[in-house]
Image (cartoon, rainbow, N blue to C red; front, side):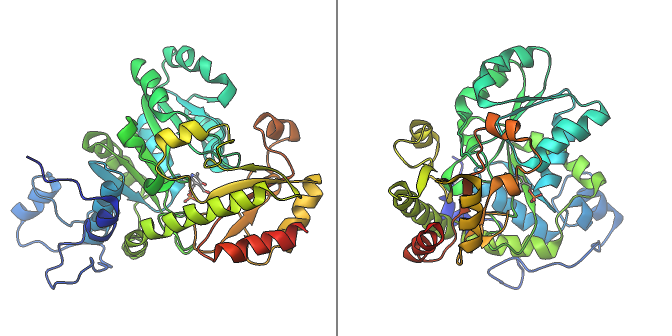
Length: 389
Ligand code: PLP
C-alpha cells in the first residue's frame, strides 16, 4: 500500500526537506552550477535518468531546486513539478510544449498571458482562441477543430469570475485536449485543480506561494509524464529558477497555509463590511452567498481566497480618489503578499483594453481590486472607511 499523502500543512513544512547529510532541517542553498562525479559511469547514471542526482543547475538538477520541486508537487497533490524563474516562464514552456496545436483561453486571463497567447504565439504559427464566459458553449466546436490545450484562471482577475474546473475537464478530455488551470489567485490552500481532473496547474509563485512580494518565480505541476515533456523546453529555453530563489520560495511555502487561511478570513470580513457600506455599489467575492459563483465556489474551493473587488459609488474618479487616499493598502498591481495592495484595474492590469473591451468583461472604471494581506482586519476596514469617505 502506498504511504498516505500528508495533509497540505505537513507537506508545506516537510516535503522535499529530508536529504541534507549534515542534518539541516531544510535543504541548503547549493549556489553551484555543476557537480562533481566519482566516475563517468556515475555521470551516465544521472544523464541517462537511472539515478536522480545533481548535475547542472540550468537543467534543474540541483538539490535546492529538486527539493523545492518535491514540495511544489506535494502541495498540489501532483506527481511532479517544475520550478521556473517566473510565472510567465512556466506558462510559455507549457504553451510551447503542449499548446502547439492551438490554445483556447477561457475568460479574462492575466494581461501578459493574453498578450503571449493572442499576439506572440501566433507569430510562431500557434493558433489561439479567446472565449469569454458567455461564449463557453462554443468550446466543443473549437476543440473539434483541433486545439490541444484549454487554459484558464479561476477565479479571474479582477471580476473573480469562476469556471467549473470539472465540467471543463470533461468537455476538453472528450475532445482529446489537455487542461491547464492557472491556480495563482486561489493558491493550493483553497483549490486543487488536479484533484478535479485538470492535467496541469500553473502558478505565478511570485504571488501567494512566495507570499512576501520579494521574489519572482513560477511553477508547473502535473503527472510525471506530462511534466517531463516540458522539462527539455525549460532546459533549453533557460527558464529554470535560480537556487537562491528556490530556497527563498521553499521557505515561504512552509507558512503558506497559515498565511492564506488568515487572508481568507480577513477578506471575508472586509467583504461583509464593504457590502453594507453606503459608498460601495457592489462587492465581488466568491464567499458572499449572493455572489453569482457562490455555489460553484462552495463546490470546487476549500476557501474563498484573499482577493476581492469592490465597485465604488461615484464612478472611476471616486475610485481613483479612494485608491489614492488609502494608507495601509499600498497602491500596486501585484497580489498575494503579506502587505495589502489595491489596484484600479482600468489604470493598471486592464489599461491596455478599450472601454468597450473592459465593459464586455464586466470591468468598470469604478472597480478597485484588493489583495488582502496579514494586517489586522479592523485596521484594513478602517482604512477603507476613511478612503471611501
Ligand atoms: N498568472 C497570473 C494570474 C498573474 O497574476 C500573473 C502576474 O501577475 C502571472 C500569471 C505571471 O506571473 P509572473 O509575473 O510571476 O511572471
